[in-house]
Image (tube, rainbow, N blue to C red; front, side, top):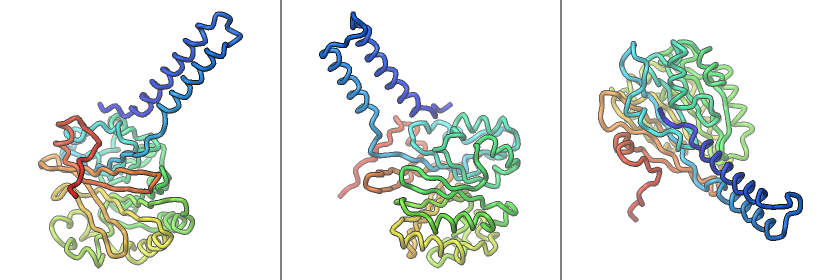
Length: 324
């Protein structure tokens, strides 16, 4: 299983190392009460070195994966290629839904997913899909979160929505979810970005900048043809435009792709970036979405990374330099 506690383990090791060196210096003081100036200098240098070694990184890495299920109703596991990814090296894990064929039918499946994605971590966000919602109470028990919510991390505000609030194939965002979006849009201030996470690509339907993606076979199965007037264009987008007017960049991030394509990216004229990533167990060339974030400069960039290429190497999070 993936070591999703790398951050905690690395920090603990540094803390133990610092504590060991400090105790060693104190133990060497024969008087155990009076610390000489030389010993005090060693202790000060040790504390300074430890504090520097535990400085927060200037760049953070986030991963978005979705549609990791295999087409098997008996074996509730994710695509073995996706299981090879070391999710613990990422600072955030963003899940776009449909993790297993029936993710929440049995709690044992959720425990399995927790061993891979660390579902209870505040840095793991899950936009539930139509293959995740057999038992929403079990999901809430496994994640310590409701089915939709908002959270904040490193200067980025996230809204995690639930597109199956009525029926699996009638995708809507209404009632309390609209209220949540409105409250965030009205009050958001100290954020560089707002990321709106959904499972279904509900924003494709009727979007003027996505006509080439509307009604084609690649996206029909992605709830495009079955979405009723879900309110994205008439209710949600206007609220997001108000957020953009504050100088906050908006990203709509979804996960119900993979059967035909593994990546989706449109920068719309309204200023919103529409992204999606997903996988398919029977196809080669699947990809995940990798974000790099520098909170100091508010720079957030992303790339779609081939899974098999990534897992066959050293899983480095460094990107090759782009040609000038």
